[in-house]
Amino acid sequence: MSNRRNFIKVTVLSAALAAIGTSAHAADTIKVGVLHSLSGTMAISETALKETVLMTIDEINKSGGVLGKKLEPVVVDPASNWPLFAEKARQLLTKDKVAVTFGCWTSVSRKSVLPVYKELNGLLFYPVQYEGEELEKNVFYTGAAPNQQAIPAVEYLMSKDGGEAKRFVLLGTDYVYPRRLQRALLQGTR
Amino acid sequence: MPFYKELGNAGLKATDVPVVAFSVGEEELRGVDTKPLVGHLASWNYFMSLKNPENTKFVNLYKAWAKKAKLPNADKVVTNDPMEATYIGIHMWAQAVEKAKSTDTDKVIAAMAGQTFKAPSGIMSKMDEKNHHLHKSVFIGEVKADGQFNVVWKTPGPVKAQPWSPFIAGNDKKKDEPEMK
Image (cartoon, rainbow over all chains, first blue to last red; front, side, top):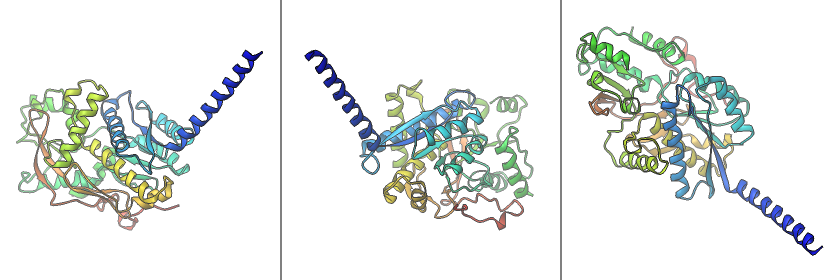
């Protein structure tokens, strides 16, 4: 009998400890989503960005975190699959409840997640040069717009230092970024 | 990479037909035969070869992380432009949260305006007050045999982003800030 009572006490105690553990955990960290392809064709480029996010979170945590709380990364793998990007983004926002997401490389992946961040009023930081023609409340663009990468390069090639180029060939794969960028460059060089 | 190889096979040197890449950087050149690429150009807002105290810190931080995280070829890791952009973004977001005293999306968006951070590219990086894009310096680098870039040209200072290219008809009527719904 006394054994049984002890057993119940222990169970209750551990349940209480578990509850304390969970609530303290939730209050003490700020969750940060990491939405980069870790498999598939884009993994070669995007894995380094996932590592950069983890490194920077580690750096910030070592200097005390943010608002006195540690940052807690939530890493998912959208696997170079554009519809999967939107699914994983929704999961980060609704299930994991991240405060911010760092992610995407290709413009198709960004276009895929955009409706999710707008609908759920999330926050996405996009770190890659892109074609422009977009300005969204829920996104901060930390990579270059065309006038910060492609257009100056063309101007350089046309300058004396750059060899005064007169003819250009624009090459690119057939998707959003090359098509839209070339539209901007063609009209600019005419 | 096959494209550069074919240029070389066709006898076209970088001095005859210079190629400027907008997506070939240090990571893409890591571990590949750079011979066909030497002398060709790339345009970016950051190169690993830039010399300044912030970049030394950034490169060392990543090298130490690669070892700690046991990344493959940890002794040969490189940094590149999108990595620098990621690094700046997280630091600015953290600063904005401290300023807003909250992680609430709308409060953080407001606090992001005009945030600054000493960037590994050597400039004081600034988030535009309105258009959600960073002001950035532009560097043109020449590919060297070791897969690094030698800067041959740069803008005098940071350039404000124009998400709506002035070269595309109709863009002059578009606002330089997002709809705040």
